[in-house]
Length: 151
Image (cartoon, rainbow, N blue to C red; front, side, top):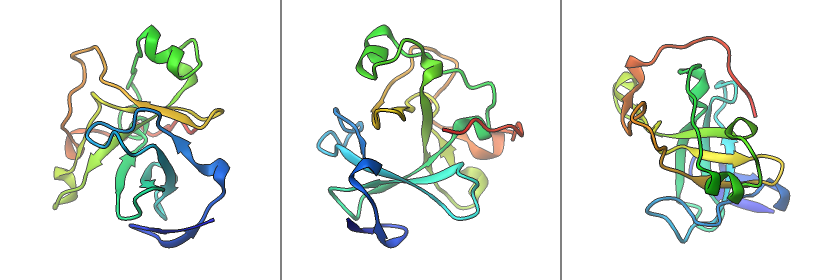
């Protein structure tokens, strides 16, 4: 299948590449199908979450563990059930990134990550029930811990 993406122009993808968000994203509840497309040179830590339904809609997301190796999101029992897992550690997590100039002023939303069951290609966006994270962590304030968990 072909799609004209926001950041990568025309791309080819297979139906099995689609990640299904049954509830959509916060503010975009009608958007249910996305592709995760890595930006070149990012080693898979910086990606585009590209809507399949609305080609002009794409979000920049990051692997939060690339900058916060101690990031430890814990989902509720209900959220784990929705994703067909027993523990949060069975999931992949991505955080929305608001890109700014200079880049160090860009922010990550560690409070509301995307939780992905890679085996089922299903994901949800959650609000973590902790005060340890907030919605605007400045990129310049986060340190690169070195090791990156990959999905």
